[in-house]
Image (cartoon, rainbow, N blue to C red; front, top):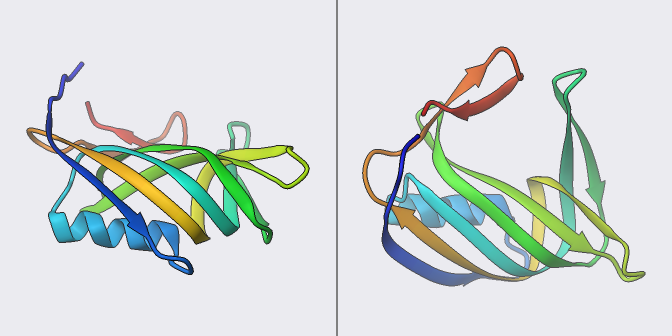
Length: 140
């Protein structure tokens, strides 16, 4: 088990119309953040969510083309295939107060989004493919 300390804290927002994953990844690259924690709130005008089916070892994806509020967004930052990788999950509320949640994929289009990033010290976590689960997991 590894323990990390936070070395830096970043706070910011994305612009209406930004693609959330791409815009966050660009911010991470600009600051060279390779390991950390992401939190956020806001709203999206569309979102692609995924559910990992453990039986098939594949994501089942659905695109929601509607305005939804981000009730909770959390994720981590690590390295996958030699690139900075934000791994993000979200819970989104619809107009009728029902919710949808899961792994956040592109394209997810921002209506308004505010985030916090806590950067970890030390060597970044590296994701490697795990045959047993079918997922890219931290190498510990």
